[in-house]
Image (tube, rainbow, N blue to C red; front, side):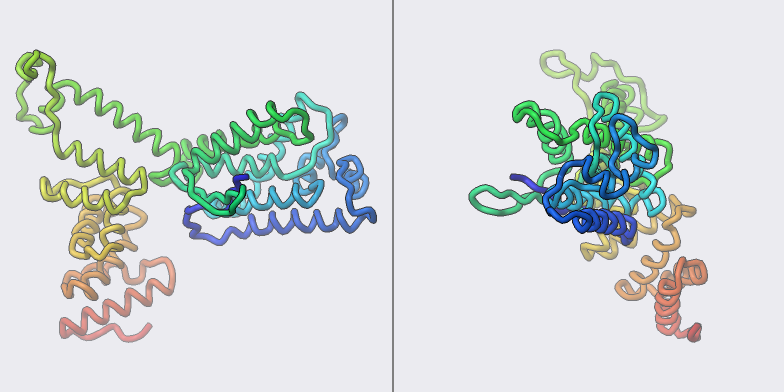
Length: 408
């Protein structure tokens, strides 16, 4: 038995809506259990009587049932499994999407799953599986490079990690919902609703990311796909020796004859540009979340050409990694390049604050620190950051023998 129990995705916002959905499902289940005396009812039609028709009637469904069925469960194993999956995948998706959009997305996933299931079935339907499948599909689109901790239980109990792509696509979708049902035979599980939910969640998030209706980063599935296309285009372009010469020498490059760049047997030899190669390797390392390796490659790039600057997010990621690993002079130089190249980026003020602190606290370059900190004082998003900026600016001013700002 393999059960996902956690992910390595960092959550930067409390997922209150997901907590609320888990709570609502548990309350509905407890009310269901309290409304009968036998204690072992699992027939959806019986549940519909108990809760006033909340089950989705497959033969003559009411509109409200497309929503209420999502909060009803047949037994303890049913709700325990669903709530575990909702907790594992839903918290990260809620934190990424925000509260209102996540709630609408969750309910829409359940509606879509039920509608798709109803085209070929007229049986009653209960459970949050379709909604949770949509959330899981969304998780895959948002965090395709993440890893999932899996609990295994055979003779012994233990855990191991799997890439989310393998766990979700091959285990949860292909095996659990397509291959295993065909091998086992008849079941009252709505596998069609699950598959519809996965499809809806993944497709909806890809579309939202493509249209920039969702916060983007360099690790979502659309960003990975675009970078793959860019690498393919670059590889194709660099197959032309003239293109390689232009990349390496700029406008002073002269046309190169393919015959002039050949191996011992007459085959074309591709002369690679080390800067292009290093930039590509840095992007690949960041895609794999190997940030320390990417930072080391970036330092090699700076040795070859200190004028090189990466795309906005990648430049910031490298600076953060250098700072985190204690390479503060290199981090400061990386942040300076970021500010020079992307002065209007939404992260610019935060970068200036961090850069100012590094110059005061670690590098003792007080004049440079004063310039950065004074520029962002009064522009930071909250009182905590303003207080920190004021404190370190006072330290810089005192070290320079200038009067401090006083307390706010």
